[in-house]
Length: 133
Image (cartoon, rainbow, N blue to C red; front, side, top):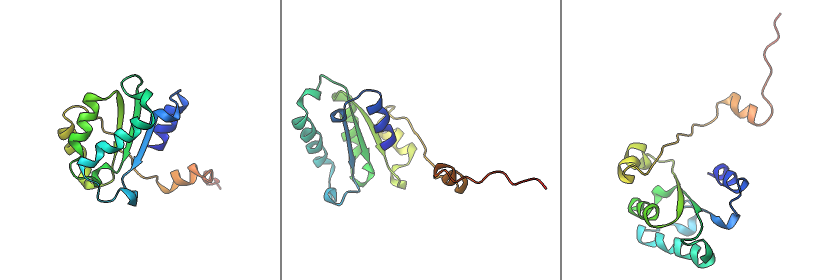
């Protein structure tokens, strides 16, 4: 999600048009679906110029920790001028369940962990091919 956020920023979206919230943050523990709108309203209080006039992007990470988040996400997509990215790493956020609850408003992107070789390549330490003898 951070990579997507960086891509949007590099494409010209000002940082204030990009909202990232991690629901694994302990300060948000115990949050309920009825509390989610307070986050959106706080964002628009801070950036009123973005409401209805500019297209902003929200990144909601580990959203499955908030029970009943699905209607909130659908309402945001239907009523606000936003692009919405949701992520989760739990069986509670299975793609078929999200597709059903979002009723055609979702695209799935599966992210798998690096293999050992990919991790080495990413760190710039990928071993070369073995020498032929």
